[in-house]
Length: 121
Ligand code: AMP
Image (cartoon, rainbow, N blue to C red; front, side, top):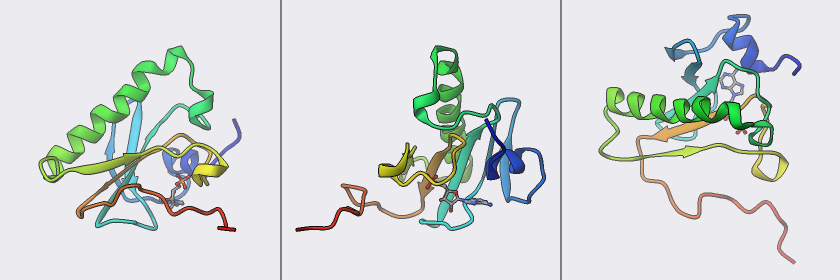
């Protein structure tokens, strides 16, 4: 996989507000936050999209959610609740092709979660 913005953040080639790191993953603040708390949790392994996941990645994806729960507890929004989102491909609006889990918190979120980008007839 070619280098992405997020692999450059992992390699410290570009700066980011990193809030958590371990052997498998990194979490940092989204540069364009959509909520009072907006974190991106990424695997260090270069995986472009959900479509590229294989059986070997089961634990890694689970790990991202375990990190999300840990950060929610540590940052104090676990009881209030929060939203996790993983966009895949064009229709979901994925812009960075390194797998990432959005962790949004600090306000109530509506449902359905999207703005429909299809033009109404
Ligand atoms: P997605 O649209 O799901 O691919 O999400 C990509 C996210 O990356 C967007 O929410 C962007 O605001 C965020 N983003 C892009 N560049 C950076 C950066 N340098 N540091 C932190 N977040 C970024």
